[in-house]
Length: 116
Length: 116
DNA sequence: TTTAAATGCAACCCCTATGTTGCGCTTTCG
DNA sequence: CGAAAGCGCAACATAGGGGTTGCATTTAAA
Image (tube, rainbow over all chains, first blue to last red; front, side, top):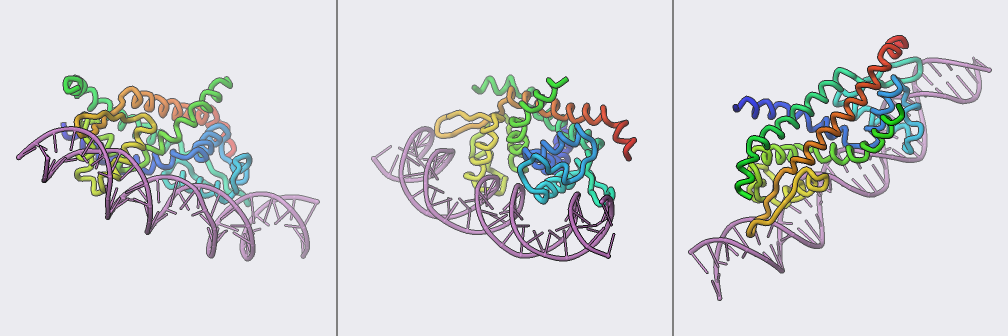
C-alpha cells in the first residue's frame, strides 16, 4: 500500500547523512575503537591514525552531527563515546530501507524476468 | 575471539565505499525507483530528478562501482537495474558491522558505567 | 536516407570535505 | 608559580564530488 512509500520518504532524508557519515574509513575506525574501548579522549583517538588531532576532532563532530557519538568534559580532556541508542536506531533505519528494496524487487521479480 | 576482529578488518574496506555510495539523496532515490519499477533507461531515470542526464549517468556508475546496480543495452537505450544479490550482501555487511559495534559496546557497558 | 532519440565522451565550473599549521586558553602537575 | 598536556579556534591549501555544456556516435523511425 502507499503507506510503505510514504514511510520510505520519511526515512530517506535521515538515511542520507547517516550513510554519508559512515562512508569514511577514518570514521568507521573511530567507531570501532570506541565500541571496543569505551570513552576515549581526542588525543587517544588520534594516536595511530596518521592524521592530526584536529582532523580527528572534525571526524568526531561529523559522527556527532548524526548522533552516533557524544562527548563530555573530563578535566582537561574531552572524551567521546558511542551513543548506543542512536546506533540501534541507525541499524533499524538501514534494515528497513534494505527491506523495502528487497520487498519491492521481490514483488516485481517475476514481471521483470518476463521482460528479459 | 580474535577472529571477530579480523573479520571486521576484512569487511571495513568494503563497507566504506558502500556507505559512501549510499550517502547521497539522488542515489538513494535512484535505488528506490529501480526497486519499485524494474529496469529503466537513463532518460527515464533522469526525469523528475532536477539534474541533467549526465549527472544521473555518473550516479548510476557510482552505484555500479559498488555493485548495487547493473546495466545492459536494449536497442539505443541503456537500461539499469538492481543487483539484488549484491544488495543482499550489502545488507548483511551492514548488519554484521552494526552487530559488532553492539556486541563490543554491550560487553563493556557495565565497565563503562562504572567509570562514569 | 533523413531526422530524431538516447547515449557516450570530454572539458569545465564550483563548492565543500579533509587536512594542515599557528596560536591562545584552560587544567594539571612538579 | 611555571611548565606541559589537552583542546578549541581560525586561516589556509587542495583534491574530489557533483553538476553543466557542447559535440560526436549509434540506433530507431518517418
